[in-house]
Image (cartoon, rainbow, N blue to C red; front, side, top):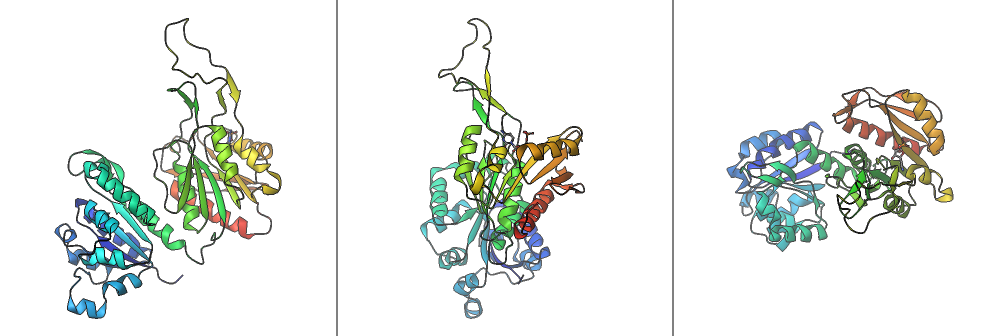
Length: 403
Ligand code: C5P
């Protein structure tokens, strides 16, 4: 792969220092970084630190005669595969949404036809202000991609959405954006991923659900998009942001999930990671059930459709590769084999959740149970598991007879 080039615009916010860590991650991955530092950004990080980590000159002046001669704003954007704004301040977003061009950063954003990825960071009130939300909607409609912001404690002492996404997350989003181009092993492939829990209504305020953060499914969707796939993520309710380059369809119930999954066909592969509720209440009460009258209600349950089994049996519309998951507490391999046969899918990613470091932890050790045999993968991070699964899917779709 030829060297990828990122034009990194560093805006003026407390989080600007994280752009340094991001620069280090990018350089270590062999990505060229050409930095533009806004005047406000220079109040938070020094041009010298940025230049040293980027191993390039820092551009900061729209009207510099020498820079204009060697590298004007048009040339700057032309020389990049992707423009990244970290942190994207409320001011930078507002300028970009309005098409203002009064410094090098905003002029470059207006002059480019390259993909743009913004990582916003600002005070929670600034982020939730209708003006910023309007600008966000405008920028999204203009095709700008976003990563974050996260929710959490902020430097200003408040709590809420507005924190810069972690450098590692921005780094992954950049790799995803950069690998969307030619040469990506899954370019032109359509992949469906189900993730998260389902929520089955009991009455207007109560639901029957499963504990599931959706993290592994989202990581797999992100990893597939990084390999160039056109990913539809059918997701139950989660607190996670849509991974870059992924189309998310939000659903609540298993029946909605099945309908959305079917609507995403035809697909080359379907990966069912969702923790689907096996049952739903037979009857959904139209008004909130009240305490007191005649004791607690009795719920009668009916079985939900099995989405994995249904996708495995869609006849000519069946994806070439259908993958399921199995979390087991005992006899992992035998249970996974039985599940493979019962569901009719091509392989099962199984793990032993009785290991106390797996559930809720950052690592995983999985087994791939296919029709031809079993592969045991070592304990690695969940992000690494996702990357390997995506690679394995690319391999199988490239082969004549995927297993
Ligand atoms: O049957 P079990 O829930 O153990 O199987 C787990 C696998 O089946 C997962 O891949 C899960 O996403 C999928 N599944 C499904 N629809 C259901 C139940 C499970 O797609 N109703």
